Image (cartoon, rainbow, N blue to C red; front, side, top):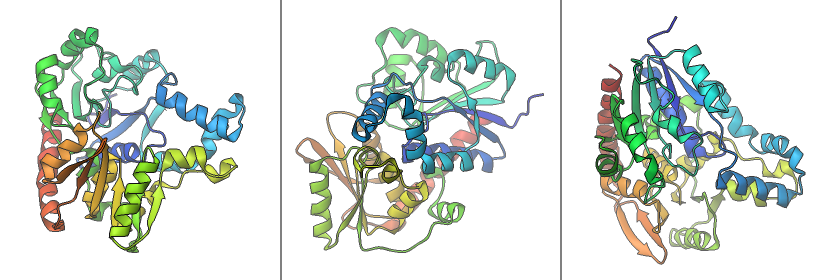
Length: 370
């Protein structure tokens, strides 16, 4: 018999993405605090995606690993991030096809389905995109369909025009739609005829104190700058070096993809650090330099000055939303846009703004679930 407390979540496939893992965890934690029983559906990366193919080819080529040993290699490299997911995120059994997803829907009834947040509506990264608009749910079923902080991921969005009519119809059955980027509100209205509300990324639904308490994070303030780079390039390292020199300190580079594909000669040397180490790196840094949305999000959560390096040729909207929400500064630097903390970083003022946005975002979620 179905429990009215069970909620199923479709999110960006969990892998080596620290921010993606944490947004999945935070949304579950927020729902648990409301008295619900969240389950994130374990839908893996589409192995045909360019990102997946590139990462695997780099790992296999650089470490000279035969293709038939690739799964073992991935397990070794991702052991800490996989442990975190298994320990802290409630998952369904692996659902590796649209057929398995439909079977699970009928076998494991839930009160509501939530899609969100990180790039869940990005065609290039997400398998079975139709089902991330809940195509697998029969039209007449009463289950509540909700989008929380859903993100298209790139500008312009990469959803094919021929899918517009289908997704417009599917979105009409949602009881509530919210998005992570302000720019997505008019996109949904103009292209899909759907009304949406802006809300915080799920990671910001939890406070600094909650993160420290939940994971036993160690507070050991460092004079170092923490450089968290999703795509590490010489230019980005130069910018990190310049910021470090301006602060009269050194920097620690934390770059998961570079770590995976370029560090050392053995797989053991390529094992990605624990998620808790990443959180502590931001928590204890003097300053953060990052090209990651979630690097900025946790800088704000932990009250750290930061510089965000954004490729202004695409994918800027998620950073633009932070500028609008928190009154940050922006300037151009060649092919990049640099987003900074205010010159006088008023930690208390940012915390108060975040608390208000958090209250509004949680209110959206609670109302949608009633």
